[in-house]
Length: 408
Image: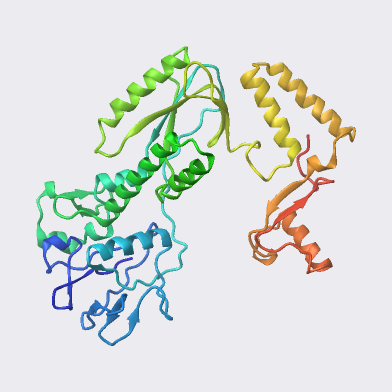
């Protein structure tokens, strides 16, 4: 998507400025781009100037009030948190964000981030985990990526800026460097990251439980909107946890020095031992201190997923405890056999077999109806008043497998 930025002058009118306002008023409108490939939108007509409204908000020369809360509400790009931050920062800089309307089906896709193929297995040597701290925000800050620093091909030809004044992406987009124009998004991200670091530091020093809860909520609220950190897990071959930690810190520092600041790779923790099942599904003992492990950590498997019954959760938790902490693999196998035997002999409490799944849409909207969707439909036909609604979790027990389903 694209739209032009408008900056008010001292006479109360508005002047069209470039993607980089310091480059002068002759440049063309800057582009606003979302994560999906959308066709360009038309900028506001040059015959209709925008100027500050006396009571706040933006006003057009036709006296039409244009605010996010007006009756004819503009369709902003997805992400109200981002938009509210942009509006606040733009106001501080006397910049106006125009009315931008979405176009296209919204179904366009783009290539996601690279996820390395997982080498599944049980690792009995320490595994170091290195994380890129706030990777996407760091890239945006390092290369000054923002709506208002993006130059169109026409801008780039007209301005003929030297190569050292711009950043060019692998896909060909050109952004001016902060020496010419600091982007609004990088400024916002810097402030959010600084505030979160401060809140996390205060959290470590807090002793009162209520104060700790408030500070923890604050640092989570300040978590950068593009929040996921990207990590890599490495087996350096060190025989001890302490050795893996030392090599992890050295590797993180060496790699960080090859990137443009503030992109930073950090050593986070060691897993020892480590059970890798598949992409984003693993378990291990979590070490931040070489003397004693912090906890048994699991990701993406049945101990943390809500769409499994309590029996499965308890079974997997106990097996992982035997494998990772007790190092008793035969004991884990025997525990599974005993549990299956109890289940087949009807020695299990029925409450352990209850599965709950969320109803995210109406039955007609599902291409393939899962068990909980079919159950909700039957309950609705029987008694609509007590049937689960969209947003509810539907509890049920499977008493007979579907025809052709895999069984133990």
